[in-house]
Each structure stands twice: as structure tokens, then as C-alpha cells.
Picture 1: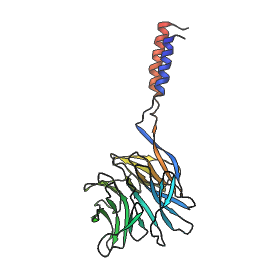
Picture 2: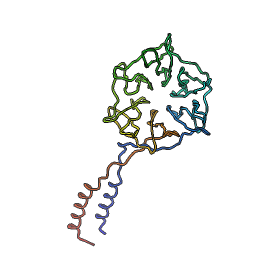
Picture 3: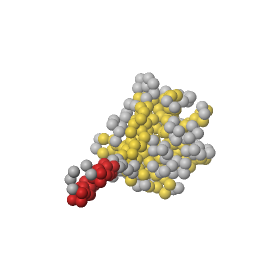
Picture 4: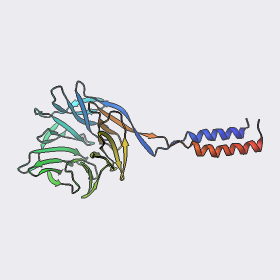
Length: 294
């Protein structure tokens, strides 16, 4: 075969193999399952890949856990009958969580301090997210219903979204807060609602402002990553929720029994076969006319 024609074929094969990293999917790299537990649900992940969540036993009690470097640890909280869960972790390893239907807590290197919204008439406090400055978000209940709060060094501020929803789920290092179905950026609220869904719930936010959560279409739950006003659906077999994301885009979630850790995987660009074939066949025809056949 003429070497010019060989060059054309090599160029054709090379171009067909080109892929772009613009489109991103997710691949599960680890199952999160506390040893001996009936079910395990991870809720938060920091930039070191440490994961926190809760697991349940055969008596339906729940326990807060930390997963770090392949090892599982139960947090040293004073357990109640109903149990407790861990919901957020920062890069210093501070963990926030809640005793179910009672109060929140923060665990700093094994020292656990309760978190309760100050004043009277507050029945339940949940601590759900923490950033690297130690700012904590969550919710509390009183006679008028549920409210979100921000705790900065022990000073509590109530934050209720005018868009609906009152539970604050997470906070990033720029102070952006994600709630049930909104983002609060310095007091400016943006609704997060997947088009056509019957329900959209948001749970985690990273420093890029990417939000993860779950939306429902029909009776099926789908995970999503929301970024710059756009939704990307995350299809992981058996998944029922996505609950946390770190700055590397690593996500955690659950299938109802076990948790998972998934990482972004670049997807190849749609095949350029048709336009490339037309162009290269034209080039091959040119070389055939110019140099003839072998």
C-alpha cells in the first residue's frame, strides 16, 4: 500500500480514538458497609476521603461512624435508646452529628460537645454540616415548626429560606449553605428543583458550589450533581440517595442497605465517525486518483 495512504489510515484511526474529558460520569470504587451492621448510610466526605455516617444493628438502633483509610470506627458519643448519626466532617476531622430526636453534637478529636439551639421551647436540634472554620449548620424545632441555623463560634443565627424548606444540610469553606432545596449565598437564595420531579432534596456542597442530592420521577429516585445552574444525573445501579461531595468531586451515597464511594470518570466524546469518515474517504479518493492503486 502507498505510504501516503497508510498515513491517511493512521490519521483516521488516531482521530477516532480521541476523547474529551468534558463529560463526566461516576464509577463506584468502594462499598461502605460497617462490619456486622444491618445497614450503612454515609452522609459526608472530606477532602482526605474520610467518610462519616450511621449504621444500624438488628435492634434498629443507629450508631455514628467514621471510615478512614479503610478502617471503621464507632464515634464515642453517649448513646440514647434511639441512637445517633454522624452527618458532616471537615478537613481537620471535626465531625458533627445528632442524637436522634434530641440534640446535635460536635466531635473534636474524640471530645464530644452537645449542640442545642439556645433559649427555651426548642425540642430538637440537628447538626448536619461543618466547614474548615468550624462553622456548623443544621436545624432546630419549636412550636412554629422547623428552622435552619448557623452556629459560628457558639453564636447561633436562624436561617429560614423564603423559597421553602428550612433544614440546612451543609456549608462550604466560602460560607455557601445548601438546604433542602436551595443554596444560600450570602443571603441570596437560589432554588434547586430538578425539572419535572415530584421532589428534589439537596444534601451536600463543595467549594466549587457543586451540590449533590436526589430527585424523584415517578416512584424512582435519581442522584444528581448540580453545578452552575445545570443538573447532571448520576446513575449508579441500586442507588437511592447521594449525600456528600468533596472538592475532588468524590461522592458518597446509599442503595438502602450499604453505602458507596464513587469518583468522577471522564466519558469519551460522542463518536466522530460520520464526519471523519466522509472527510477521510475524500482524502483516500484523492490519493487513489493521484497515485493509483497498488
